[in-house]
Length: 196
Image 1 (cartoon, rainbow, N blue to C red):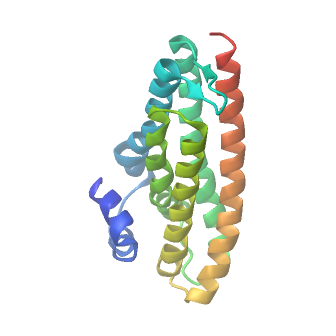
Image 2 (spheres, helix red, strand yellow):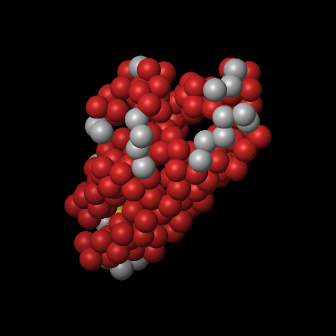
């Protein structure tokens, strides 16, 4: 499964073709890939916020108690897992008008692999500088968009112009899901910081 990570980062077109040829199920994807990949930002955020603390430009450091960080991490983890399923559902609903109508499980699998750069960008939360986390998040989002734009035409067997429109719509909705996720995460970590 993790050879897909390298393939998605180096040659996404070929990797998406290989992924589409595999007969993978959603439960297999979650147990062998998403559960582990989604743990990266959760574990890194836990370590960063409990040991180093959030560092702001004015020199202020805000730490979170470990027990509070565990509860926040569990909720954050659940939100990440749900976000993959939500984006997969969005792709499924939007793909109904195309000739090759993938089922919901195929769409969730596609969304899970497309989210790989966002999961990997969570590594920077080990040492949580606000500007560095924002930069890593933007880079991760841009690469997710690249994966989406390059993967959708092959996934739906449509031409690039239709794929561009479909990908743009999916990306817009995915960004809304990401903003909601980030907003809830900031609220949770901010709430947890008041208990320190």
